Image (cartoon, rainbow, N blue to C red; front, side):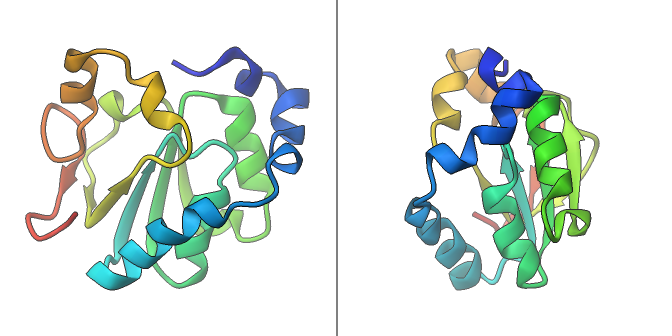
Length: 135
């Protein structure tokens, strides 16, 4: 479930300027490079800050988020057309494959129960499927 502030278009538009230092995303980008990921699933992609980084490097990226207002910001970013944006959560994705699935920032705190983790898990449950060699 999306935090209410991320559902509001005016708040989604000012979210990133409130947190401009995103060095926290560097390890995820290194992980994509180190594993040779060609397909990345960004669960809880929000305004697309991370999703656009691997996409800029030629990696196929799918970003999923339950907050449409945040996705609108993501779609409008330079390079936004290079990412497949999906409105929803990881439990209801269409069939897809990923070499790496990420949840950056505070996304994990929105997945509150063991059953939710099982359904969300990209390598288990009814969600997307990771490449067996993926991360």
